[in-house]
Image (cartoon, rainbow, N blue to C red):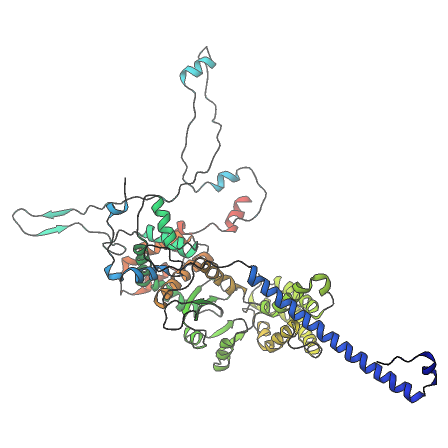
Length: 551
């Protein structure tokens, strides 16, 4: 660019000066646009780098997969997988006993008597520490003494899993001179002619589906305690109990879920080892949960081969009401197909894109940005919604109309204005586009007080599976995955209803076999996780009960 000195500038005519100023302004405008574009690219790259760092340095899943019999099988349903690898279920021989047996409490101030209450329901063994007669005589030579109230202190002992052989003797009778032989009644057994008992199978289910311990590891742990149960036997017990007994409860809970006014849905990917498709093909575990404001929590897992809309279509075919979900199109397809279903969006997903931008820029640099402003408005929406948790649906709807609806209108008005000035492919632009595309669904919660503002309850419900699958590599086959989905459903619904999963599994496996295989299943009313008929030993102390003791 040619530089003009002061003398030359003074000799230029007015029109030339005007043209030079206009050219300079255009150049500055183009330069500013280039700078803005570069800033947007930097913003997008920073978000991408953060994601790549998380992928590179984040925690990795365990990737051990060995199909050699006798090795550890870190797969989701290694129960079914181990059986298939070793032999068919029909060929598995039950071990004899002789083969197996060989030579969150909330924070509160501590108060007097609290320890005794905490330990009140635990078996107590009293150990006395006394002085011998010789010691007493040495302490009191005149022999005159009396015993005062004992000084008492308590310690809590832990006993690892213990085993006991229960040997049943069935009396057999024969008449004199007659061929007739009769036997005493034999109690109904879980898996007749198996050494497995409800307590043993419940323990395996609790380790596997509550504590995410693969059965192969559990077999190793039992072996350390001189109890040698082959993993394929435990796998067989798990699958058989799921199919033969516990699937009945799953079917009943699914029927009850259809009576809810709101269902929250989510899904997570997983990998199936053998399903007829190329290795590494994704399958999905879907979860359907009763709405956050429903009286009783119901959590059902449903394993499917794909993420197609045909799966929620089939699962929800007998349901009418609200579906809470993220922005996945499969649910929106159902919303368009049916008049008796309405999809509500998730505000947690709506804010997530803006939160990522703020994290990338840092809170200091993010001030004044579109992302920061949007997060402030959504924060106010959540603040007002948080005040409504204990209200009735009618009162909640009224308060939403008065306090929250105006904030929602302000947010969307702001987004519709800002979308003109933000690069569509930037992180902020994508977050704005998501919200505007989901506007119809994000405003549904303002129509009915039964509808929660987000889908967090469903995400919490599927989290145990997401965490548990880090202990295995893949799901082996579809049939085993479906059986495991039944067991996860019962475990998670039990936890949501403040039950002790082990005790509940044990009780179910004691009671369900008593009713045969094809009887009327009305007895399930008393076995549902929210039933008042469940014994107290299945129930966990609630926070409210503990607080009542403190008062």
